[in-house]
Length: 75
Length: 75
Image 1 (cartoon, helix red, strand yellow):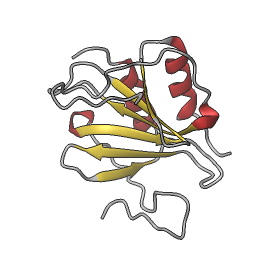
Image 2: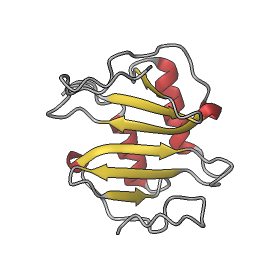
Image 3: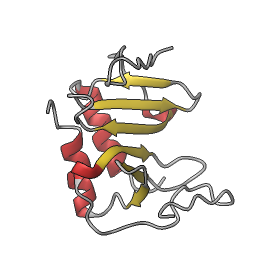
Image 4: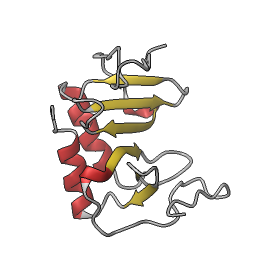
């Protein structure tokens, strides 16, 4: 699948998607801060169809989308 | 528990914690954008001890912490 979790590696994301994914298909966005298990910040978007996609927090659209996400008040 | 999920309500968070929680105890932070099921943005922090805590994205420390989270590059 898009998110191959590899038990040997402590990081969750093997394949990271760089193309833009519109927020209207997000069910949730999970951020894993860097820690002892994995040295980098990992961002996993769960889509409304249940798929999970790893995205790179360094990429501009990801930063912008994340920022907008938690500034979105009520719908 | 801290996060009572209530099947009747579409929103996940019943009790929302306002006191500061230091990022070093976070395992992950999940953001649920407002949608058809729940009108407001919900932010659920999973702690390293496995507990899940709902926090209010409107509160200053939450905004600041979320912002810092995805700006944290490598550890």
